[in-house]
Image 1 (cartoon, one colour):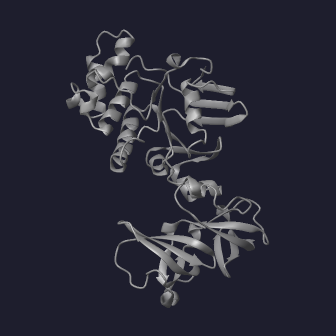
Image 2 (tube, rainbow, N blue to C red):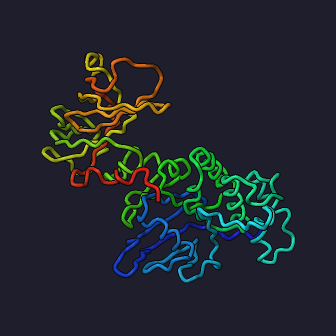
Image 3 (spheres, rainbow, N blue to C red):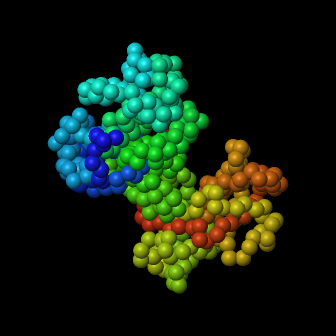
Length: 383
């Protein structure tokens, strides 16, 4: 790999894109660390693909600069940037073998001896035995790996992935998530991946930027975004959150106490917005899998110190690995609980009176001025 481009971070400074009176991307500062797997996550129309295309040079930014390492590439055309892109439509050459598809970029650059590089790249994507087949003889996942190999053989500084798994079925998509992560770890090249699929972003990326309305709503490691969302949009878009409207009654000693639905709930002050004070309003959040569900008759067996609210089961859905309950409560109309299917539990049918309880440490607080359902309508949305 002697012709490998010099490395460096991808740095977007004040970059924006407007089309007439419409702003697709508001001025944005973003750094993608060298060698990382970085995801731009959001619903259709949030600006993620436009941002990717500005890195690729396929869109000219209205303002701002794109730097790769120490080089300003804002004015460079796509073919002069050390960047390759893999799209959802793999655009393989149907008349060429897999070997020749992968070799195409090298041959176009005038490289005479391509065999070792092509063989190495096919080995990397585990398609060495398929070299002489045509694209139509491969599955969707195999074609996707050919597209990745064809892009990587040019040793780009950055590989851009625009919804690359969108055309695959669910099971194959999950396999390819692990495969792409393996390839990225092995080659060490910076991957920037655009997706609307929350699970896909969390499975593969080291860092996720959640985009909404042309802005980055929150940036961080997948676990950090999931456990500590800072906005209702992130809480609702990245997985599912139960958000409960509450009033602060006490804030001291690292703990915040609120009232909601006639009862008291506790949560760590470090998981609340700054300047949370008594008399203020909060949205108290807890993820469905953090909650335990007990029949109301067993309320006395709930361990002391846990947050708890009463309710009535409206609906239950068996989905294999877990049963998902929807509960009506004084604290909220449609609280969701995910219970792992370890053993059958009697008394948890629709109509049953129940107690929902969880560890106060698993509770987070958000600014109540935000829309409580922001991000809800976009979950699972397909472009």
